[in-house]
Amino acid sequence: SSSGFKAGCLPPYEQPSPHVSHFAMAEGGGGADGGEDKEEVAWDSLMVKLVALRGDPELEALLTEKHKELSSCAVPLDASTGLPPPASDGTTLDEAREAWFLRKVGQQGDSRERRKLMKMLAKALRKFAEKYEKPPNAEGALSAMEALKEGGPTEGPLICHRLEAGLAGTRFEGLRIAKKKDGVYQLGAKLLVAVQADLEGGALLVHGYFDDSGVLHPVRVPVLAFLEEHGAKPPSDDCDLFGGGGGGG
Image (cartoon, rainbow, N blue to C red):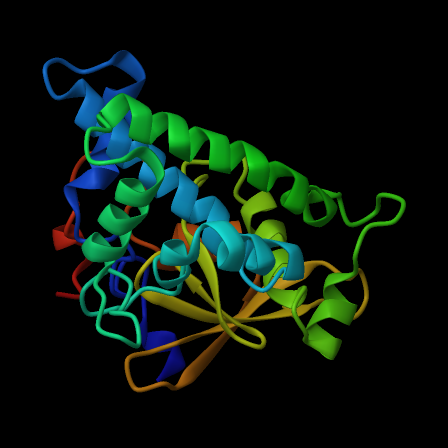
């Protein structure tokens, strides 16, 4: 039954990758491998920003013109691997990533130059994100209710940024959020939820989550409350990277 899921019993949403544990380490420089650690953190952070903006016409044009390799990286993750699925031509995440670095910084480019490249792109993304980051009650702010009703290219960026705003300042801040299809979003690698705007106040709610069989279990709560109850470890946790404590296997 839909009430059979308790906190932590859904599959954990972390990517099965050691990158998650590098947030704190990278801030301090972290020894001999500090450069590589920082590079992984910069990559993960860039992908969080990039995938949240997918669909925005200006962002899509930028990717097509200058960063085509990243189009297959900033996509919803394969729940079984925690990684983006291979591109239509079979290119894997690592291949696309290395091809981008090679084209942009050359074969001699070191980790510092790669980080500089990612920082520059992340900065460029700010101008695309601004219109989606306005608080719901701000003048000129886009309406989540209208975006969900109409669909279209701005639905994904708006809803992803509104969900991110609901996690700001919490232990779940920085979670990768991606639009899977109209009205359905992926939180991290594992959790798939349907969202809707409250008819009275317009607040964005997690309407329900999908189990492994694709059955929707209604919850109707804000995203933070949903993750506190149903999510596993937040991305800032260094322990239990593979979700061993989640009970979902």
